[in-house]
Image (cartoon, rainbow, N blue to C red):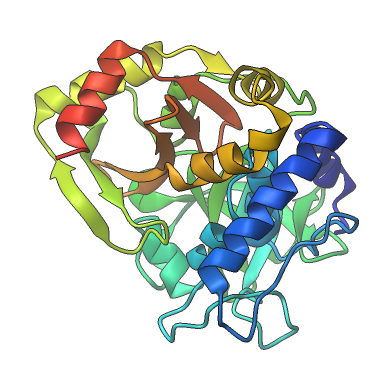
Length: 326
């Protein structure tokens, strides 16, 4: 990967070497159990950093940080044809149309892949009439992405006119238009924590009234697997409860959840954590969608985008049981 600043930031959120060893075993064990009998399986080497395949690199780093299984990451990029796994295989790869952008303290992925756009509540084609206010000129960053330019270029970063916020921008690259989707905030502190209100703010959510639904979806984020919460009182309860949860950085999260586990139970515990997942889709009044991960049995929420973990209290546990465990 050519963007050293982003890569350094990702590297800093990795746990210790011994924890990496334990988590890698859990990841591979989960990989083998899911992909048993399939011909094409891509295992992650513990001695080689994953090749940067845009979206995949970001999520893979986060998977290593908490011991989440790689197949879940692969599922996010599984196309409608049912390809079991994806890696970057050159110009014909599924992820060829995705590029990186670092802007205003956050990392974005620019894409026009219809499946990716649809998952985040956008039209499957980004057009000129969706481009709003000019924010910055861009230029190629020397790798597979963009960077801000001090001079005028034929590449622009623009607001997304239908829903102006930091969660999604539009990139005009010549005559081509792409969506720049928020991936995560940038931090060089591997134990920094950020409240849920920051994540909500990226999508223009300032009150519960800015949320229209909360839905449990499959790991691939394609379809609902549970009931959809639309009742205003329940949405308000979730919003207020989630904003009040204590946030933890990666180091503190690892210590609280995994450091006390005996060595011979580490693999099982990390695998159990990976399996204890409810993928939650939050949809805004403007139609934008984003996702958080809930691990109810372990009592944690991972706020995708904040690189932070939130310990579930009794009230939030009750909300989850009443709305997601039906």
